[in-house]
Image (cartoon, rainbow, N blue to C red; front, side, top):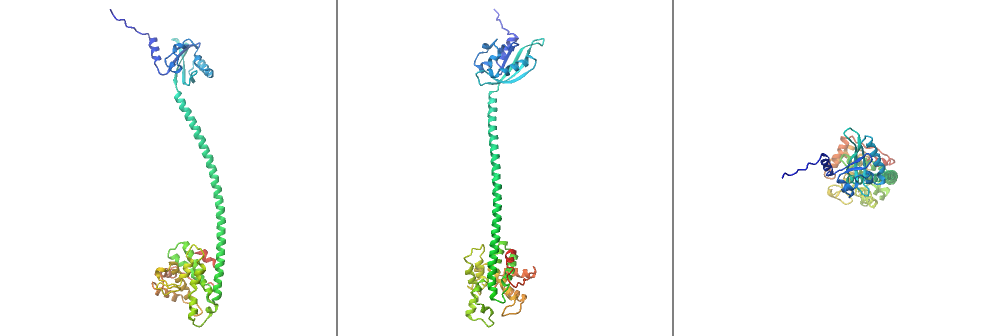
Length: 381
């Protein structure tokens, strides 16, 4: 007996293929009744497809989506294609629908066929990205607003600091003028006692600063040397005026009083907190490399370099200008003195710098008769 082989019709094959597709496939007649729905509908609605046959397709959707459903359906019956996003009734499944006219062999529209693709995950991701984007935009806006606030605060702080700097600068200028006035007064006290002394400290400061500059000192350090040089003989205020005017040889006691003026000057300035070792420079400016100086007879290693510079400048000025006990003034003799005693009494590097200042840089003393312009020493160093 021969075996009967069943051959499905083309319509049955098509239905079978469409039923197994992952996307939702559906067809409706021109009245809106469901003619065919594949098995994917069951996954979305938990109802078998057959339960919807001959029922209006609008029954698949809630009232919120009816207007959109009908609009798409009408446009397709008019020969257009349509696309929309809808969710099934009582579900959270969102599908993207593409609808096309269903035509017979003569081209007449006999219904609507469509494909629905589950885009629930995509929509959830889009929503998550939308929320995240809104969050980031909010944070960016908040940060931008905060940056504007911070910038305004910084600008205000900069403005305040500039104001404070101006006030501080004015205060410094006042202090400098006050310091200049005090030192000017101290200089006048010394020079009023010594008829041959006017301008001495100023000229020493002028030369000491030039030597320090030649030796590569910083501007700040040169300023300290200039200040110390401008007041280095303040200790002479303790010496009786008659000793300065005495033509006879000084007694041992008188000579010791003169030799003690660096220590007196040191005691005057040691409690003042200068940014430079001013008191130490004043104390050591008559000390010599071989220990023959005063008041303590220090050796080379114990004398600070600033004091060595001041010592050379002091000697050169003293020999170059007349004194009560010496009316002649000879610069060449002063330079011979430091040159011959270089490395013995005076630091050799300081002596070389001093010779360069005179012979190569063309240095010349300014002949000051008083300390009326003392502030130039501080301002030009």
